[in-house]
Image 1 (tube, rainbow, N blue to C red):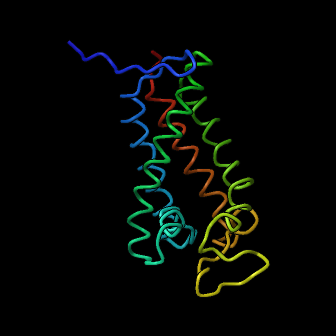
Image 2: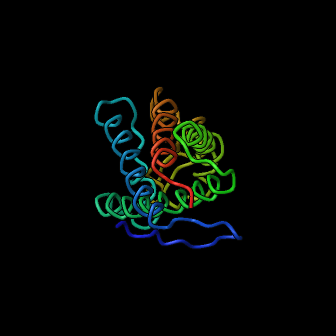
Length: 172
């Protein structure tokens, strides 16, 4: 006998919150592993946990720890959005997940990264360099300031996130 999922309704759309909680965390961990591995191998210098956490504290070690928690929370919120899309379309699968993940990654690169310096209290902008209160380098166009392969790594990591959610989320 299997336990029935916990289902919440969002705008009349049923969402399996148990699956969102489990697979959202797994997808976020996989995405983080890809990004961390790319940083460790020198493929990219981007650290999403550091960027997120440094919005709350100047202490880089504490920022990295807070950023991991913030990244996990973002992963769960976005997993919920993916689940809403899967339920609304009436289909969840690897292919749709990959497509959503690639679009998600492209939006991060094209929309979020360019505006990040304007909303991040400790990030320099393209027009003003680092200063004591703004010590993080701005991502630049397509986050290229963090390395030539950063856009590719970002798209791969987000696509893997989507594949994980699409492949393991089952419609309610």
